[in-house]
Length: 454
Ligand SMILES: Nc1ncnc2c1ncn2[C@@H]1O[C@H](COP(=O)(O)OP(=O)(O)OP(=O)(O)O)[C@@H](O)[C@H]1O
Ligand SMILES: [Mg+2]
Image (tube, rainbow, N blue to C red; front, top):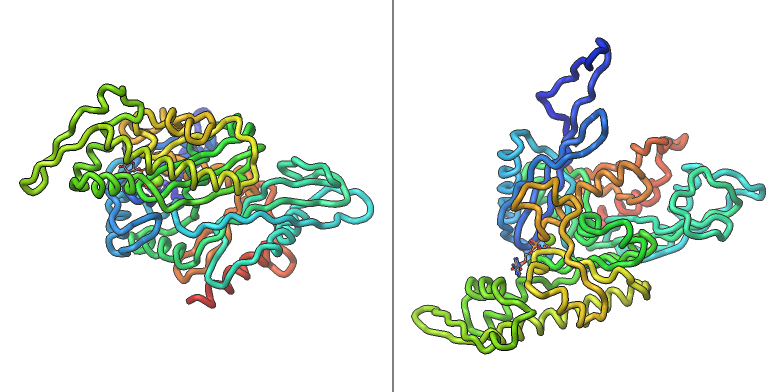
């Protein structure tokens, strides 16, 4: 968080010595395959409310299927997006919480259990830390991988499950289920390096499917059971929620750019024409118009295809994506009922008629989901493709409200600190007498993995 430098504390109305706290800037950076977005929100220091005050963006270059493939180009894209945001808000931007697609994302659930003693007593912060550590030791992290998120899914005390926050509750046995999101360290390192070279400090990191889910999913849907699917340019993020918690987060390296490439290959048209025609057709096309012909010219040659051919190519890719890949992720989440169905977002969700089409493929209800903050975002930059970017700000706020909801390990990448906001929990995560937080075990193992790699 950045303090607005030009705003000084000032006297409150009617109270000479009262002060109004300085507003803080919260910055979210979403590094997508098609575009890089910078969301700037200002939090009122007195009320704690955050208001989006600007969204900058730039075309992405050097990013493919969620991975940085050309560091210099990616750095330039981030710089341009930051510049755009700075121009919009008129304030310096020095740090950001970063959302990105990534690849080879593994979502592992583990369980931990600790004894609170023979006589029932109230749980303390230290007990919660201990049970998290116990669950964490069940997770094997290869030396070239790191944990990006540690998400407590559920606590139970003396066998009573479904407890959200066990702090202060009484019992003799505390158990928990933990979700760990693991990525190749090199993928995370490249994102950190890119953001740093663009002149920003990395304040935190969030995987795209979690950011998208926070950006669009309502509490009711999360409680009922739903899968948020964000189909972007290069990746599809899948977040399966049940009982209000993310049960699985994954990234499929297929997105809208694959549809464009399919069209260009099958219909032998240039990429730019394929992109344009993709955005024009409807999957709900009136059967009579399917025979209509589309005409293209490429390097002096004339090409003709029918609307049906275009729709068939798009449908084929979406059928594979949802019928096979997304369905597999949902099945692996172990969530068998999704009464709220698929909550669809990302740029590809703009395809006309996609909701009915996907609904038939997966046999679930489908809702096209705009960002929850749509009315607080600038017009033209508040559509489906801004779901993840808006979710980053919600993530920062949620993490502050409950420091144990999303635990973010401290990645000890030289010069690229990721802040550990857990210590800001209002009830105060106390340091142990040795001066270590009890999360140190998790942190140490990540440091060790990173040291071995670099
Ligand atoms: N009207 C439209 N109809 C169909 N597809 C569209 C439409 N508008 C944008 N798209 C597609 O959406 C994709 C871009 O979506 P988005 O902006 O969400 O991606 P991104 O966030 O940059 O990428 P990613 O999330 O994969 O890293 C592109 O493939 C683009 O062709
Ligand atoms: Mg995206």
